[in-house]
Image 1: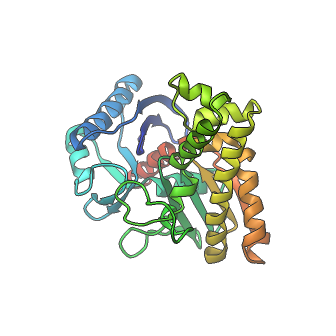
Image 2 (image 1 turned 90 degrees about the vertical axis):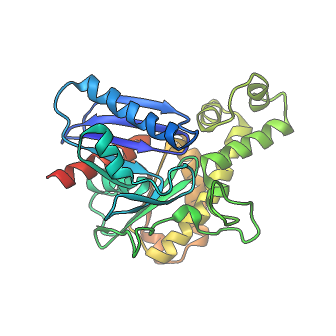
Length: 313
């Protein structure tokens, strides 16, 4: 199977076997632009993987940051990509000549983590995946929860600050968790630190034209840069507020945190755990484990492949 994780700023596709071994990966950076550009970039990545593995590809699974009409394979709404209204499943099946299966990107990430990864064995679990925005997914009583319209689990859009910043993309809200705990928020924190100290590592990186993004902040933090560590602590504390809400509402055994920012490890998760310990209610907070995704930034790609495996039998 080929699994594809399509995000707001990057794309990862891979050929995945039944044991979750990945035989080829195709990366695309910043898949922005208009609708046609995004779709052509997706097709290009799938075709690259297909050509590289040579053997038979049975189907393709997609995880995309959108609300999906499962009956029609239609993108109903999306915040970070210009593909609302696209009959994604049928369009991709026609262009690729393969069966196509599609779901929300966080749903498929939790599918992989619940089946094989950090949430394996849990009856109640949640996942937050930190990227351009924040994806969310829920498992209740052992089953993935999609809700009445397929829109359940939008944890990135819970409001944590009534008078907070406007949310990203097409979200009409303010003060969403995304505004304080996403990769976009981390870049904003880093820019603030760079402006405050132009001679520091972040300030010098900005002056040199390097993007103030998650990988850079994480690298500098691991090297001991105090400003970068502050950025990750600030991000972790915002994340902790969101997780405390999830813990109080859902009472999960485990909350899995994924996405590229998870490379920061405990520089991010330790502050989040501190906030949950201070803010969440007992006994829920005494039970829950807050852990990194086993598959890291590849959870979505692997989960998309598992989605296709499940559908194809």
